[in-house]
Length: 238
Image (cartoon, rainbow, N blue to C red; front, side, top):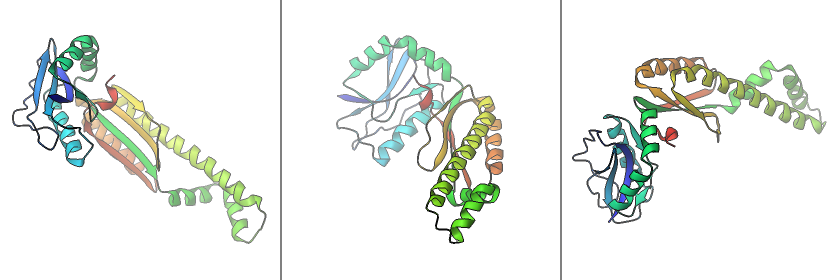
């Protein structure tokens, strides 16, 4: 029978997974498969697993449950193996790498930081603080029909948006990185101008949260600062 794989742990991890049920329309018990110094946490499946809300929730719940007992290497949603033998072979083949990664994330959790800014608030701030943009805007509103004015204003505002958001993102990263063992910055998308993850040791998490809360208060008008965690260290598993 095929297996759904949630995470890899050290063989001596307490697991404590009795009573946990896994993903799928007919959930099977979550169990461990040991091979040498490692253990894979799995459950039997008889169907192709799709990213339904229930299964996504169970996937993360199992990983967060395991985190309470020690370091884990969380797998992304949807990872499956043909059978136990396949799982054992993977654990044996890549044992050194898995053990090194477990050492890297031990005693840590991932925190994910995103930030966005209300476009209207930012535009009003730029017009208030940038004389050239304010002058162009006043000429347009006053009826000046020069066709170059809207283009010039748009280019100036776009440049100001990039400059201001890049500076704010850099300041946020610089303030939070000292609390982390590792960090990774990703390309922001949508309305976000910041998207990064930090691997924060357990003994720094309270101070990290306090700093993040202070930064959120200080960020300025229209800035939404979103912190998610503690999470399994998805971004730091190689």
